[in-house]
Length: 119
Image 1 (cartoon, rainbow, N blue to C red):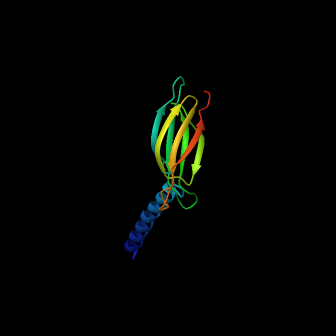
Image 2: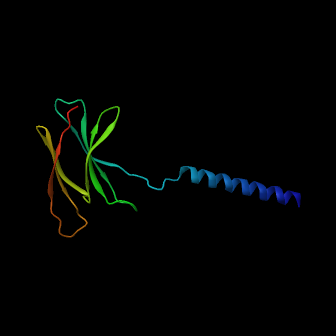
Image 3: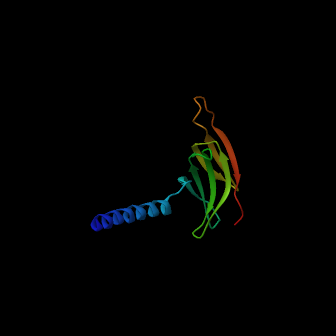
């Protein structure tokens, strides 16, 4: 009888440890960031990253422009409901993005402009 109690106690402790581990490592809103383009900005000490964040239970998919340096990332602009980047280029102090929402059968590519920040 005593041996049976010890075995049950070991099993309960084992499954309790698994449960604590799973709860500690569970992420409810796991953000999966996909880098679409990484553009160097002339005469600046940073890069312009165009990222795609897919939809989840709480938000739509969107494309985001970020100012990226070695030390940090700063969100410049977000374009909600878009999930496709056809092209991206920089002219002068403006970045141009050709984006679309391909979840519709008839989608149109739209031009979005982003003013590139000063350092």
